[in-house]
Length: 236
Length: 191
Image (cartoon, rainbow over all chains, first blue to last red; front, top):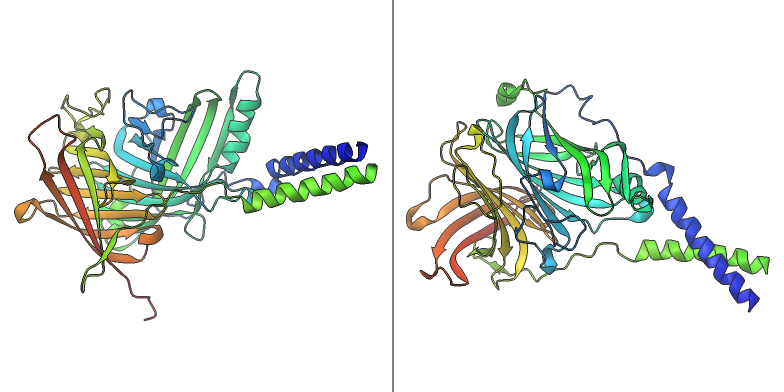
């Protein structure tokens, strides 16, 4: 009997050790500085509030701690879209003035590998900047650092909340340098192929309601030369 | 007994590692893709949206009839000419397979446009640009501008058609938007 108890205690200790090693894997960190910041290309910076209640609209399956917004918006509970959520946000420029509207669709990725410190999300953006044009962005994001450094501490805290200053580039692909892909659609961006990164900054999180203070920043690199010269923006 | 404890630790480490490695964290639900082969036109697929039920959001500046009613659409003047909508997307058998955004403007300074982004979580996303003006019969022609997942490296056309189904406002579906894709694979660069 005592051998069985020892084995069980060993199993529990082994599993706990594995989880601790997984969570505190020093190689699981992500970039804090945008890889586009050093590129020398003209950039467009667009910011938005990543708190669902401060967005224009937010929809998910309705079963998450993060509730859809506003009231009575339809939930996407069907099996094929249950692991997907959609935000509609007001995008502002570097001066804080309204610059556009963006739809962001995010789906949990089947390429998620906890052993590799990856909690992957496939995201796409449909962005409209009035008077300038439209474009699409597709990217793979890694939320591992966000889960480890923000969500888990909030759940483990006696106050069920987290406060601090966390910011990370969540974009890790699909481009080789860890940037997202931009596909120009209309106006100034027609025909454009470029790169983008998204950065999240969290300051407060509630284990009961989700993000309390969090903002996102979408940075688009503008190719230099040819027709894209006119895009050299004053927004950055 | 200590040896048994150490053996348990090793077993616990290995077992948890195997569990984390082999049990998928995310397993997207898949519906069969209802694709038809179109002669000399690649593969064709029909997506549809039943109105009003599948309209999740409709943002139109200056209109009180936003969806949902509590939606606070930005009233800044730069958005005065645009319309943005979010829908559930169904396949030919009326099964919800994704979500879609539609943004349009008839008076934007950069030119009139109609665009869709169709997101099918288990398959990928299509980015589609349509002609601003519909052709005869209300059919609007569009081009696949890009795609991800199963739709990466495809090219082709997409049509959009709005069909009224019933005059009865209490009917399940008063109208239907149909999107038909006709896509072919792009040749490899070295071919």
